[in-house]
Figure (cartoon, rainbow, N blue to C red):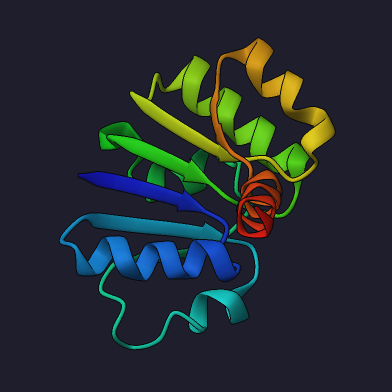
Length: 131
C-alpha cells in the first residue's frame, strides 16, 4: 500500500518504521527536520519536511496515488485540517486521524473521519488490568 503518515513524533515514527518494514511504501511529513532525522538510516521510506497541510508538500508525498493517510500529530487542528483535505479534495480511500483531546471526538464523528484515541485506549487498558 501507498501510505502517507502526517507527524513524526513517537507514534508516527514507530508506525512509519513498522509499516515500511512490512513492505508498504511510506511517506512521512513533519515540519521538524530533527524528528524526521530520528527515523534512522534503516527507514527506507520518504521523509518530507514541510507544513503538513500544504498542497505541494502533500503532492510531493504522493497523495495523488495514496491508498491511506494516517494523521498522528499532537496538534488537533492540523489533524482535522489534513483529514478534511484528504477526504474532500483528494478523496483518499482510508483516512485515520489521532484524537488529541477526547472532548473533541465529536468533530471527527460529524466529519465521518475514522479515528484512534490513544488516551482512551490507555484508560481502557488500565481499567481492564484492575479488574
